[in-house]
Image 1 (cartoon, rainbow, N blue to C red):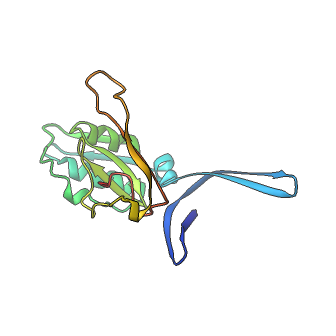
Image 2 (cartoon, rainbow, N blue to C red; image 1 turned 45 degrees about the vertical axis):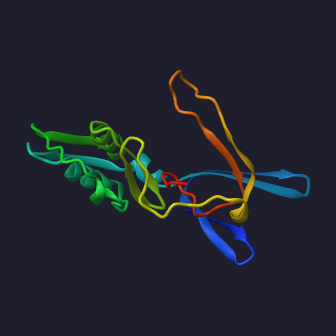
Image 3 (cartoon, rainbow, N blue to C red; image 1 turned 60 degrees about the horizontal axis):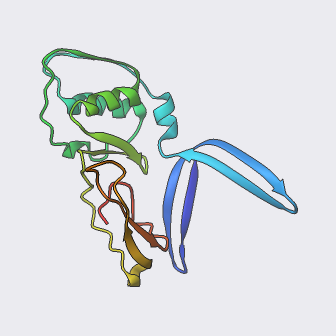
Amino acid sequence: KVLVLAGYHDAIAQIFVGDIHNVVSTQEGPDWSTKILAGDGNRAVRFGRIEKSFAAGASVQTIVKACAASLGVDPGNLAKVTSTRILDHGYAAFGNAANEMTRILGAIGHTWSIQDGRLQILPPGGVTTETIALLSPQSGIIGSPEYGTAKKKNGKTVLTVKSLLQPGILPGRRV
């Protein structure tokens, strides 16, 4: 495991915790540089296996809950998934639990990730229900926001903002 804390003065906060995949240390003159390749839930995603059958009438939540248990991660916001989809036929989840979770959630248009060891499931274009993070000149925004151009025809434009380190800005959170 690796834990990264950062901040300013007395406001130190966790900005990452995850499983180490690879570490490379090199000497550069009198100094050493260490590069760590890590991922939140990396071991769970790589090694989590599931072998479970579900009878007709099983819900998406039931299958995802079993996958999360096989991954060994906290179910996170699974209880808030609003899909009421019930499978008409039985379902056999076999193999990599992360792949099975991607397959079953993809069928209802949702995506998932692991954030701080907890499952985070979001509907298309969805965000978490956490408090909105405010970026302003007083909270550390640098310069002015800039609109980019859409990468595809009729695609969404991207707003780019530079800021001082903001530990409260997390994947899936509204800013």
